[in-house]
Length: 135
Image (tube, rainbow, N blue to C red):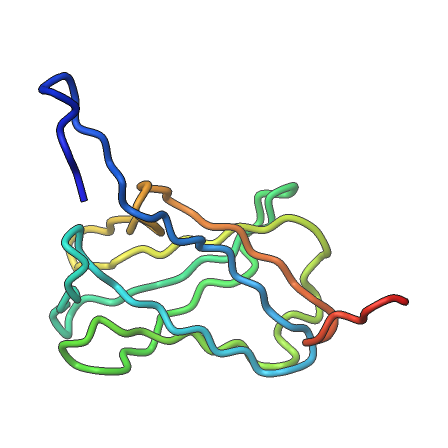
């Protein structure tokens, strides 16, 4: 929701959803992305368009994964990333980031990852699905 502060400027009051991904080593990870426009409506892409995710190791600026997303529902704007259990075995510990691009045949555009127009999100890898509680 936007509102005007007595005509001075618009103040955005929308919630910013976190876009951090947390993947678990040793198991198959499945992440579903909702592709929406600024009005929060699903974006319907033609079959010729492909969404591709990139996972980048920040310290070395190395692309660890580049994979096309799987379309889940026509007209729903849902796309899925599947990472198999052994694919992260060689990934380093530490900071990583991800972004998604849309390949439109003649050009490629990067998608914003959240409502604050971030071009990438953070990615973390856990060794196990449940954190141990210390007593």
